[in-house]
Image (tube, rainbow, N blue to C red; front, side, top):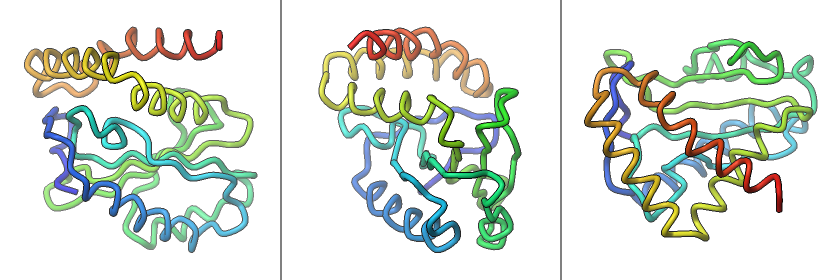
Length: 173
C-alpha cells in the first residue's frame, strides 16, 4: 500500500494489489487473535474495484470479546493502538504507519454487538453491485478531495450523508 500522509487526502485508481495485501493482513490478524475472530472483511473504497480510493487499506474485524482481544500481539506487528473510536466502547482502531507517519492500514475492530461492521460490509457490497451508485460516490470523493486536500476529517465528514443514505436504504431491505 502506498499510504497517505496524515490528515491528507489523495485518491488513486483501483489497484488489484490491494486484494493481495488484504489477504496478508487477514493472515496476520488470524495469527494474533485466533479463535476470538468472528469475521474479517476488506472494506472501504479499496474493496470497490470500480472506483478510486485513498491508498489506505481498511479492514473490519468482528470479534467475540474485547476482553479476550490481545492488543499487544498486533502492536508487536507494528500497529498503533488508537483506542476506542467515535465515543464507542465497541469499536477500536489500529493503524499501521510507514515513514513520516504515512497511514498504510486501518484495522477497525468491532465487538460482536456493534452494527457498524455489518454496515461497512453492506456498503461495500451495495456499491460493488450498483456501479452507478459507486460512480456517484467516486464523483463526490473526487470533488471533496479537491476541496479538502489537507483536511481528511472534513473530507470524511462531507462524505457522511451519502454513506448514511446507503445505510438507511440497506436497513429497509
